Length: 92
Image (cartoon, rainbow, N blue to C red):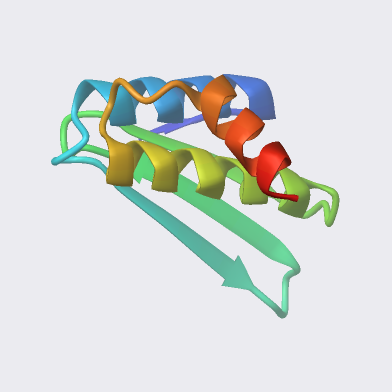
């Protein structure tokens, strides 16, 4: 298990792992209220990447990661994320 310290690195690794093996990949979120810590983990049983934070500002970043993960899981690994952003903006 590799713990990543920088959010952008974790985001890139998570997206890369999901696009490479979408059927084997899992994404989990653990929140420890007493400690105020959140742990994100992405794994495919061969590789495991984690990111730990106690910053409330990282919740927005996690929301973006959730959107990316959902898009890749529902539309396949070749989905164009920029196109999804445009579709979302057009609906508003």
